[in-house]
Image (cartoon, rainbow, N blue to C red):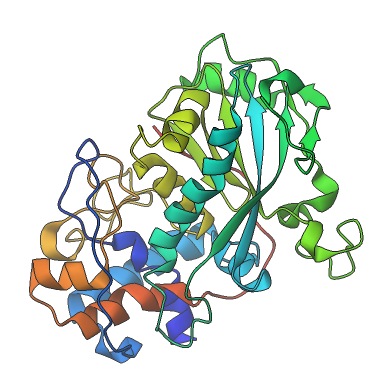
Amino acid sequence: MLSKKIAAALLAAALCTTSLTAPLPTFASVPVSAETVTDIPQDYRTACDWIWKNRIETERSCEAWSTIYDQIVAGNGTLQYILIWQSYEKITLAQRQNLSKMLEEAVNKWNDCLVGYDEWPIDHVNVKVVGYAVLDESCILDRQPDEVVYTQTTNSWLHDDMISSGMGNSSVPNIQPAEPVDISRYVHWNDKNWSYRGSYDNRYDMYLHGITGMIDMGGYGYHYGQILSDRSVLGLIDGKTSQHILLHEMGHGFGFPDYYGGEGESDGFPPGGFPGGQGSIMMAGSCGYIVSPQQASKIHGIPAGDMRSEYLSLFVRSAKASPPGGRCSLR
């Protein structure tokens, strides 16, 4: 249970040394031996305990077995996405082919911190895009015979929400593509008898939702997936946009909170700040990437094995309950 508790708190305090606007570096993987939670340095343990007790337990963000951890394990190392396209921008075949590669790269920046720790069973997460829910089918250029496209629409709750919150403007469409909820794992994870149209292989675990009129430096994220502007999604696919907002929103899918409040506050960060005096990918403006255990050990002079236990004990999750629902935003 101790490892499960720490699992849902520590990676959100991942250290970094670049700002959100800096280019994201690439670090080579360096094998290190896994350690136990008892080897975590005391300053990390203190921050972890505070995050767990004051943020994650209070917000119940890791109780439901619908987090990305659970999706990865239930899918035996696979994640299946659909793209919800609340936009009239065209998407080429090459862009659609790159979409799954981009999502796979992003989610493995989180999963790489798990490999080799506490019997985590997945070395690499394979991502597949299994469908497209669109406002206009003509947006899918050069559609292939095996591509699944959903064309039903519904009124958009996001339209009014985004305008009132400042996350979007009046160009946000007032209709949005309808999800095929009968194959949504997020909707049906707690129903062991749900058939997903006859096979679990037919499910989608999450969606990436692109929206016209949404601000480019904003996002929403939870166990259901990530919501970004359509321009951000296309920029990510084309390799022209930094992944930091997408990674932040994925962090909510792992159960990590925003750290927007002050030090020690109910919506804030641990008293004394994050160990090493650095920021977190979950604190907007303080961090642009997820630091690997070995890189953090170089930065802070802590043995790589200790850093692995500090970061990776984060990922063995906690107890189950009903999902809280709602959404988080990077603003």
